[in-house]
Image (cartoon, rainbow, N blue to C red; front, side):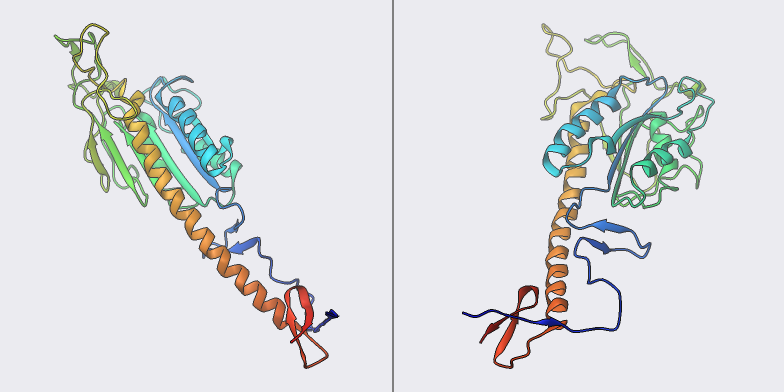
Length: 301
């Protein structure tokens, strides 16, 4: 079959054909790569008072990197840990340095497509404040026994978190435990002074999830010792290490990203269909007995 080549019709414009890989998706004119919907995902894990560089939030970061990078191809560097106050995380009279944290987000992407903020203790305070200044409204804010300053007082409106989904995990057992097994000896949740307190409960707009015992990823209670099967209590200083909390955080992010990927796939098909129509409209065949096929090629009918 003889192949005829169609000439492209002049449109009078020097603008290039519609680019299938770059599409504007929001009123903010954020440009995303529809071939890589996970490219602009950012997940921040913020540690609390005296968290240092090894804590429950760094463990959560490592878990999310392992699972989400393998499943969605997210850049591991976009899932990162940071202290609630980069200059000094051991002074309870400091305030969260949210400008530093926001700079780290923008350094990774100027057009965040998905943002998750997770914080423990003073890190929850930082996540709450940060949520109000991020370029994009956070898709998920996770607060793990959050503490709002030395007096643990949530001040409106600055400390009220902003997010499409907000979840708060909290415990009432105490600040820390002096013994692991019964009879339990613990520092109770009685003082808010100097930031040594249990988490704030009843954060506005947050789904409440109480935590009593330390649990495995599957949700089984962890025994207090090898010989004593009594459950190990969760305290303010240990709740950020609870694997079940980590699992629930992962599940929430996984559900969110699954929707984004699915929506992106549908959107990509619509975009490609639009491109094909546009390409066909800019081609014509000289012989009326032939029809236009892909890439401005003609074929006999």
